[in-house]
Amino acid sequence: MPETQPSRPSPCSIQEEKEPENELPQDLGEFLSSLPKDKDWVLPHLYQYQGFWHSPKYFRGLLACQQHFQPLDTDIILITNPKSGTTWLKALVYACVNRVIYPPNSENHPLLTNVPHDLVPFLELELYNELNHLPDLSSIASPRIFSTHLPYVSLPNSVKDSQCKVVYLCRNPKDTFVSLWHFCNKLRNENQGTLLLEEAFDLFCRGVCINGPYWDHVLSYWKASLELPRKVCFVKYEELQENPFVHVKRLADFLGYSFTLEEEKIGVVDEILKLCSFENLSNLEVNRTGILSHRGGGENQAFFRQGKVGDWVKYLTPEMSDRFDQITRQKFEGSGLDS
Ligand SMILES: Nc1ncnc2c1ncn2[C@@H]1O[C@H](COP(=O)(O)OS(=O)(=O)O)[C@@H](OP(=O)(O)O)[C@H]1O
Image (cartoon, rainbow, N blue to C red; front, side, top):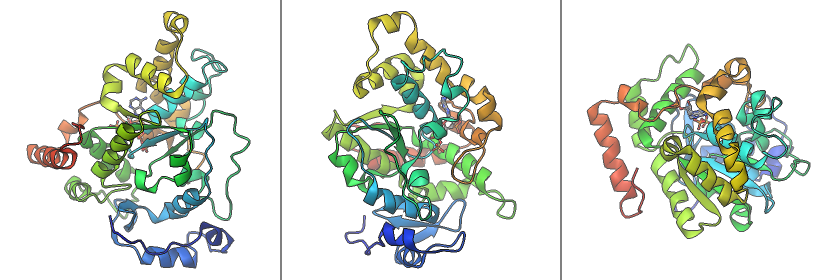
């Protein structure tokens, strides 16, 4: 991470600025031009800020939420590297904490008609990324659940200083990479063509991907979870797949929404797992044909592909797999983190 950062523009001045559509305000443009840049997987460039790579599309949101987001102690913040299972985590946590008003088997459960991203909005990608507008979050019923892909270093200080809870979901780098590669290729237009797997692999290994380096992102939250176990809960996608019952109960305990024995006995946890399963969510009309209410209205189905552990074997050569293992060993050495 660079020791000194260029001075950043104030998100307020960003708001006041009148800008033509799709153009960055002058001070944000100047700010970006002072940052290191490298190739993006979809747009021309990613920019490095506080040691991590970000899309120019979301810098406004990043800076504005760093400056303005004020969490409540009851807030829940879900954090992931992109393509680590964010959509699943959003569904699970939403269903757990709202299970009294929305029993998981109810016919009008919001998850049946809304993509999880529309129920649990992203701070920097959506809420704080609006031009000339800061969100009014005061009317959202408690517990408010938000999400972010920001690395720990860039998390608003207000989040670190408050009593709000943070859940970090980590997925193994190989499946995360393959999922990201598929996703980005969906976002590329016809003229751009397909981003070759080999090129994406090289960028990912160098840390150049949205919110990358992947390993530094994971490690920063792993360390935070060790230092602040009551604030940061670290969950692995693979463990959630292997034993969802145990891990969802652990999540609910951590968030202060423990299941009672009676709830367990009558199958509330199982109902939540069923509601949020890949099988169920990916087949809902809203997730098959709907579009996001934010971020230019991308297709909801892009968030559901395979939902499996180990799909990477179909894509990575043994050499690529070895390189990933090598980087992972080197980055995670001594941290107690093994995948
Ligand atoms: N319910 C459920 N259960 C298990 N897995 C699921 C679920 N929903 C989405 N997925 C899989 O998660 C991958 C998408 O990652 P994210 O949700 O993190 O995407 S994003 O960062 O919010 O864009 C993507 O993984 P891949 O299938 O490997 O591409 C999705 O299929």
